[in-house]
Length: 174
Image (cartoon, rainbow, N blue to C red; front, side, top):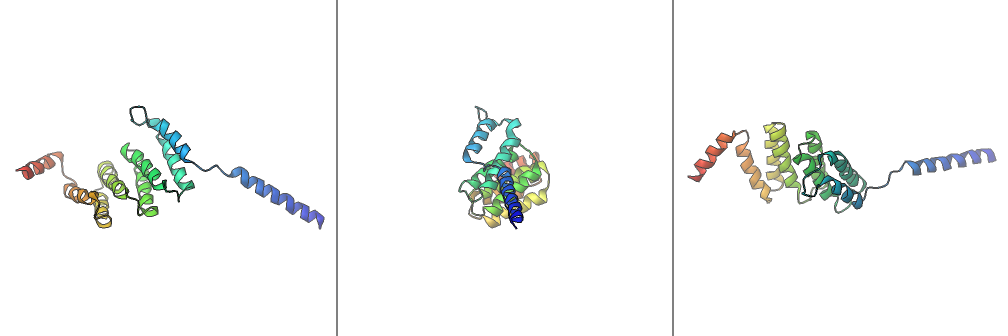
């Protein structure tokens, strides 16, 4: 009986010890700040080599601290970096969807959706149907946002060539 108790006690110590060793520390606001210090150059341009680590740090911060008041803002900053530097389109899509799903009341959701429609669906992927659908989502979900009127205008301009846009603006000015 003592032998079984001893074996169980040793196993419990090993399990607890192993679990403690495999835990990674939570990502903190300081980790995000350190990453941003490397991500942004003195002239506020982006250090392209630092993007993967920065986006990973942003993501880990949000994963580790999903209830933190600044979690949606940190996720939005990751979206800005990935979308504006034309990184992985699918990653952009996934991050924007996560933002609007996990943080539906976040005030920058219309901006994130607008960036997704414009820079990813329209410009990168040339998927006018997805762009139109995303613009419409802004109009339907955030009708009082300034981006709702911008989305409405963008829908009318989808697929137009630069020449067609110039002609449209010239005719509107007359």
